[in-house]
Image (cartoon, rainbow, N blue to C red; front, side, top):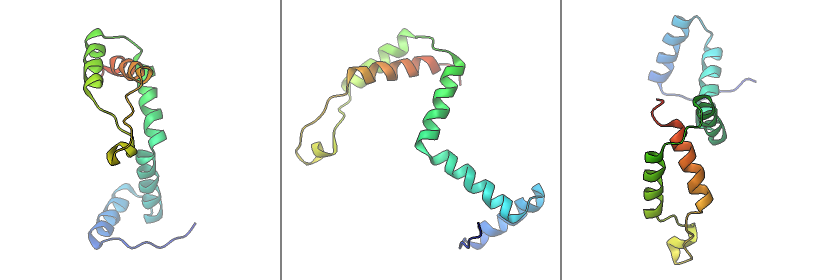
Length: 111
């Protein structure tokens, strides 16, 4: 697909230099850049990538991390949008706490 976009001169010049250095056409460079940007900012893709990393690292439970996560979540007040305007406040669901604890402990120390 062909399209036209407006970008600042310095961005264009930087893209031109990078295209020459990497021996890519300007179209390929911009296409690659937009693909990468979309992939980095798509919430489902980010979650899927984090899940893959956690699966790769294994699911070791760490009591310290679980305990710390539980204390933090118990002190947190999670609100619905209505709560900001005088509506009900919904507490954090315990099954969600356990899920988050598991994810935290499976990724601890593997950076």
